[in-house]
Amino acid sequence: MSDVAAAGQGLADAIREARLAAGLQQVELARRAGITPSYLSRIEGAAWNHGGPWPSDQVLRSLARTLSLRSADLIDMRNRARRPASGLPRKEPARRWLRGGNAMRYVVSDDDGQEVYRVAADLIARNPQGGSLRATTVSPAARPPGNAEGQELYAAALRRKLADDPGATYLRVASATADGFDMLRHLTLQLPGNAGPEVTGNVRSRFAVDNPLCANVLIGENEALIAIPARRDRPELLSCVVIDDPDFVRAMREWYDEFVWEPPGGWVEIDADRPEESLDEIQRGLATPPG
Image (cartoon, rainbow, N blue to C red; front, side):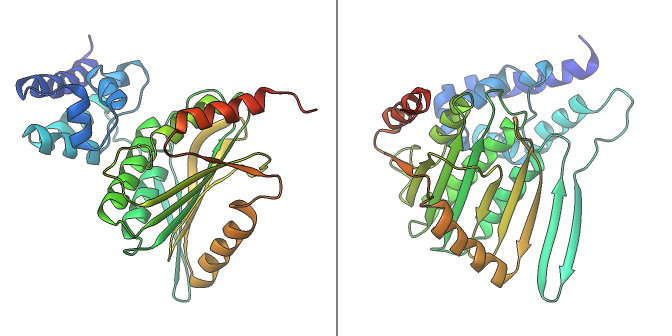
């Protein structure tokens, strides 16, 4: 095993051994750390040695707090393990700031798409108390995205926000092809509203029957994020633009309410009390030929 692979395995082993020493099952540690059990299983299995994503600083800090480890040690182990063989530093995401008047805009691009989800999680955290969040999720392809770590981070940020802010509202409209529906199912089931009784926010999720939109958006009270998939047949979000402009954000909210939340092609609401059954019904409808 190479030094890099050994360092990556060492990170996985340190987390697993600390969990066992604390007498915790994976499900319990994942709950306390704010991640899914399946993601924790991938971390303990060193999924990055087989092309999987690396855990973010935030995930490692959360695990360290729960397991009484030093987060700096875990982060250092990860950084040493993922350093390229050439010894060159990891390329940082490109972030360009565009300013006009009092408005702030910035564009983010990243080779693996993790930064897009981190930016979205930051937007969620900044949204004012009792505010609304509107989102779309597009799953055009059956292949799993390469930025699963970022998706976990995004879902965890939503769960924290809604648990800490019962007055918040989260609306989401999802769309997918028949081939990409399993990906939509996975994303839907890890979102708030299906995360247990501790989530008390107003969470509603709809499936757009005929929605040609091929972009993910997140609209808060004061900011709007637009993220574009790599291609129509690839779900990775490699770049996004964030706009802080009151007129733009207000127009985005109005557009969402009029054309996205109740699209002309029709929609089906996903029952938060029985999400699996709702998704099954939608998937059967997609598989049924028209007429």
